Amino acid sequence: MSSETEPGADSDLTEGTLLRPMFLLAWPLVVIQLLQVAYNVGDTFWLGALSPDAVGALSLAFPLIFFLISIGGGFTAAGAILIAQHTGADSGKGGLIAGQTLSFITIVAIVLGILGYFVTDAMLGLLPADAETQARIIPLAADYMRIFFLGMPFLFGFFIFVSLMRGYGNTRAPMRVMVISVVINLAIDPLLIFGVGPFPRLEIQGAAVATVLSRAVATAVGFYVLFYTDVGPDIEPEHLVPRWEYVSKITRLGVPTALEQSMSSLAMITMTAMVATFPPAVVAAYGLGNRLISLAFLPAMGMGQATDTIVGQNLGAGKPDRAETATWVASGVIAAIMLAAGLIAFLFPEPIVAVFLTADVEGRADTLAYGTTYLQVAAAMFVFMGVLQVILGAFRGAGNTKTALVFSVVTLWIARVPVSYYLIFVAGWGTTGIWIGVVAGDVVGAIAAIAYFTRGTWKESIVEEEDEEETAEAVASPATD
Image 1 (cartoon, rainbow, N blue to C red):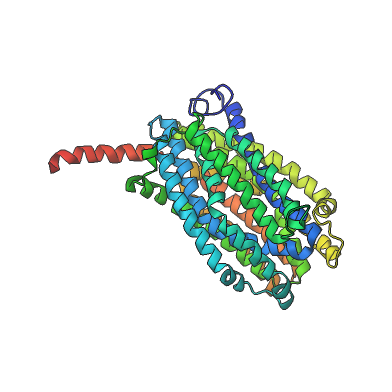
Image 2 (cartoon, helix red, strand yellow):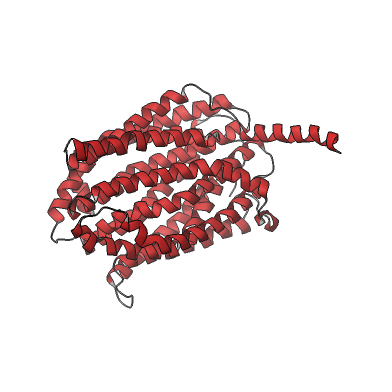
């Protein structure tokens, strides 16, 4: 795979025209995120054909699972940031940083998987579910979560592969691996859920098993690409031995991102806890609506990740103005895309929701009605949601992960959660309070992040800081000899 057809560790992102290399980097990331949605949509579609309770269980399980995943996710993002800046600076340390990231996060994934398996019941017990939800949905969510946590190392393996390749500037290789994984998941999902042919009928557990198996294949292929091809960072066996100086850098950058993602998942859990006080039809509609909204959110996230890499490489190359220009261009592009998506969701909410709720059983009509209203109201935030992800990506690419953390807190804990609580329990708006609260978060967060971004105080390279530290150590060392 040559640099003529693949973005890679070359000058494409730091020299010449900006729009073309940005799209070359971004569109595979958008496809990866859309394929990620296919995992969720596939599970939701087949579990929706099984029963609304299964969809509701998935909506309760996902934020709790994401809470633990987000911890390791922060460190994979840190690895991508470091590789991007070192690639832009041509420091020759990309393979070492990739190896350190891989070994460290693999250990984290194993620990989190074991922890998640044993605290599943405790986490679900924190949700203030009504009696009906407690009896019908909570046990199904527990069944799904335990299997998911057992497969955590496989899920993280693929996340590591994608992040390392993204920081390096190669996004097509992970996209191709993702296609293989999604095809496997979609193929075996109905077989394991409904027990087709020789396969056992596992119902909601089947969806979890399908996800774990497909991720295991993706991880195996991804590691083969990293270690046995030349399309990514050059990782040597000795690079896998943990070194404190690099683990500490990954930790320093990763902890704020892990906190950001963890607080995002805690906000999701808090929102889910408030929604769980409503009947099962509302719980199912909320989960279904969130997965449909992710069809818009994840492309925005893909553009944000592309911005992360472009900003990182350009700051590493000493080109902060180009990094800023790239961010504004990405914001304009994603705003146009999200506007189109918002119009579709606003104009055709019911048929979109109905596609993913096929089971003709008790509660379907109510779930469809609530889900339709949720999607239509949420369409108002799509543009804000997209621009916010790009701006946060710019902060992360610059290594300002604490800044990204602050604006995630503003979005979720200063706007979304308090507004939702007030509208639901104080103002008495009922389900309408849920939908409005979700929208308020992204609108407030996007406006605040854009205002701060225009100050320009985020333009600083991690590589420059490292060079300054090494210079200071070199100057100080003769005096200590």
